[in-house]
Image (cartoon, rainbow, N blue to C red):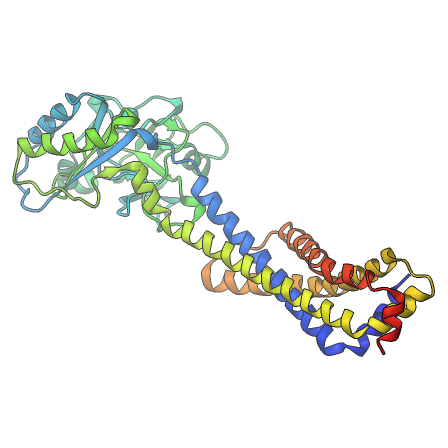
Length: 410
């Protein structure tokens, strides 16, 4: 075996070997954490929202100067929107997934409970909101027309206001009632009056980005009309290929009813566009980390190539002697690859410890999750393969040195 001469050589070149080992350790630690963060970002972007993203458009009208608006205006708006060719359904709502504003309500299991079980996103709107968003009921039923109440009336009644029913997400149901079906159970979401759970939908992502990953689907639909004092928000379910055309026609139809209204250009768009903007930072972070990983691995590979090339040049006489006494080209090649493998292994062991240290710092400063152990073997294998590929060129050059030439190069 070549281990004894390899270790002897590394001892004679301690500084160079230590620098390469440290470079490999740093690469291994950073790559492991970067890949973990990239995976978290991709997982976050791939989580189901529960809504038919590609079929929805949103129109938001500012509430400035609309204090005297009446529900009849909203009914007229929705009738005009339904009449547009290509519109399948229309609903008024106070918020949508991927929006930046969020309406939230604490949820209790007892009327006098001091600490709420959870905080859920409260979706108010018109009767066809569930259908328009494309939510899938997994148990129970949707909200009935006779259960709906005006938001303004409930606010006036305060603690005496009662919301008779609610539809919640499966995630929220599992958190509230882990021991069984939530349909028919009672919660307290608006006041000290009980609210009965009548249905459970599979998914519904809450708006905004203010809560942790475990709370992302704590959402509920309440039979409460969307408040008008903040303006109107309409969601239209349309033919996907006609979204831009219908969006322009819908805005024109609403302005024809009331020309003085202010249309929020920023929020009047397709839900798919809202989703793109919502995850813009996640995509940017993922690509940035990919670039960092590629650059770091390239620098590490260049360092390995440089060191191996230097050692080949320095050891040309030694290589010639070994060739002269019968060493094959394959043995010379294996020698340099084994040497690099040992250096990489030392660096990887240090890198694994450093990876957990970096992860602990990220957990403390940025609330990142703990690094799963599976990412360490991934980083180790990546660095090992990179090292073997990087050293291959110099090792092949070493194995190709003719014994006679090498012996004369004293």
